[in-house]
Length: 137
Image (cartoon, rainbow, N blue to C red):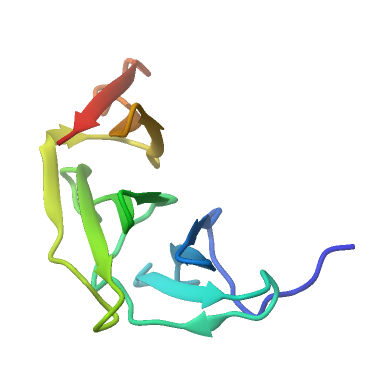
């Protein structure tokens, strides 16, 4: 049986485990579509953390890579550029958003790790529907 967790979003959230806690990044269910961050010890009860100070119209991707919580998302402007940010848990703050190779997408990205390398998988923003892979340094 499913349980309400006290949050709402217009798209699917991104969830991953980081330092013994579950973390979720999702779009606020409002016109601003801010990216919000919550964490949980049990997967049911969630506590708000600081927001990402960014907006998007697509589902974000979230992963623990080399001990850092990393989010990748599409910019909320006409460029649809792919952006990334990492969370500093000591001060509960996200880094400034960094462009990912000048790439853009017309849908939410997906993250994967192979041999400790972080990859972003996304749909091309050129109308072809081509699927692309980008290795993140």
